[in-house]
Image (cartoon, rainbow, N blue to C red; front, side, top):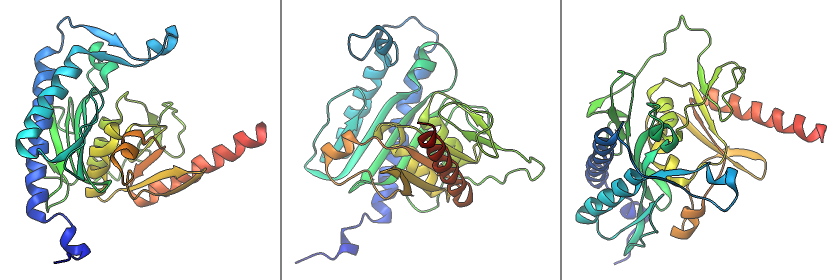
Length: 289
């Protein structure tokens, strides 16, 4: 019997089950991070032999340990699903329609320096499309750690409770996540947190009006793009110098693992405005060359 496209889509019950597991995994990450914060830990640096490059991409012993724990737990729930993680090799599942993208600690440089902005991110992709997200964040709109999540029915949630935030109309200039932290990032005040996952969650939660990412990895933003879309935000990606609506991270596992594209997340009007600003900046730079 041939299944129709509608029958191939993940059911609400399956999405809800995967959301619950994603929350469990992100919480494991957060618990390990909290238990280790402030202690002496082994730190290494990825990269080539260039001294400057070697200082750009730190990894702590906690990163690897958390990812291993997450993968072990995930194997108990969905052993056939594929896994892409920052610290360990791709796990090709028997059912690669579903791929989990895991970043055990996003904002590692912040973490190893005790700067309290970092996250443990879990995203689920269905044929490359983000459908489930769970991000444990070291701080949130309540000024406490917690998990933003989505996947089943009900949109964006925080620690199990439905979430929606209305901006204060008295605030005339709101905040934007900007790769360079520019204070004049269009009509917003620019901020750079050092964690793409945190900024995705903050867009979804309404703490940031919009955010732009220069060249994120899939594990940085897979869970966050799911959160943003669940909150009603738009996602754009840059292709050949043009900003177009984001649809997926690709169809093949290896293609997803290599994905690195500039992204913009935000409410529709703000995301469009940010794309216009980036186009204008690119044109100005090309004219100066």
